[in-house]
Image 1: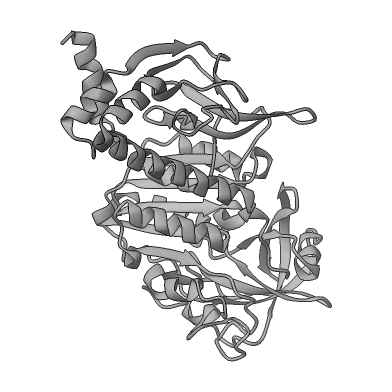
Image 2: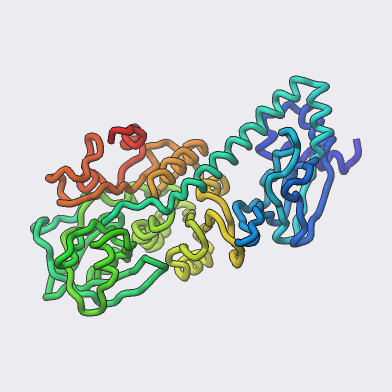
Length: 159
Length: 281
């Protein structure tokens, strides 16, 4: 096992997202990871394009944006150190529905979605655990978007 | 929880004059009031509210937003949401109002001694929490870690921005702000206020949370705090329900078995959670 791989396995092991995974499953995940960096302004995802990865941010800040012809780039979420960015890699047709842009120099672990899907197909138990954890991430993300959609701060009682 | 300060005659408004008025953000103004005649000092506790009477228009329940150690002036931050609040926001220096109060149960700052404190505010909800933050900072040594988490619709609608910046500069206070969305010019966080709870530094087994904002936001925040391991009994929310008499007689603010004006507006979450999700209430 290379020391670089050991480092990635350690990072994966320490992240709360992967806390419920068995050690051998964490190793499968780490085996699909690589180190990446993005300069400020670089895109991690672009709306409509195929998504082959998700990211665990180790340093920096990433904005999730929607492009509007009249309003420009609307930032709907920011991510920072420790956050997982992207779940479109797990849901067909594996396309992004928004842009994700590095706001500052950003270092991350990139996880190859096709690699993980292949491993999940070969090991259904791993696949189940992977889906279970990512469905929680997706549910949390949807819940937050719902809160944004209802525009809670517009709620008033006349007086 | 300390008892509310005694009110001489709770149904009789006391005349006050506007000392100064300041526009905070679009549609939100802060007014400082001083007694129109020589009066005894105004004593209130963070979290309490007054019934403020705009002469000729009507009364509205407005939370205190200033430092409760200042007994000479009363500070209210008011959002224009109807005829009374629009009338109050249009007042200038020297104009008169009637004030009844203070009413209601305050934030449990004494009970929270020794605990970490998580203050979660949404939109105008920072105003009723500001006196609590002043109170916490005035006796900083009594508490563990303090986190102030604030969410707003957009950067333009962040309240008390100068004060937030000052608080953020302190080493003994964690201050995080987020906005629901932005189109640029904002370098802070974007997303809902519940996302800040995930990262805040506090011990869920020894923490007290104070939440004020729209009711949906408070429910989601309380749920997130419970996910972090906090007990609903240690989570406090400030409710708003059309308060009128201020003393639990008229029933306008009845909320299940509670009267928000008298039993609240600050409630432990375990007391109101079952009622908050009842459609009939």
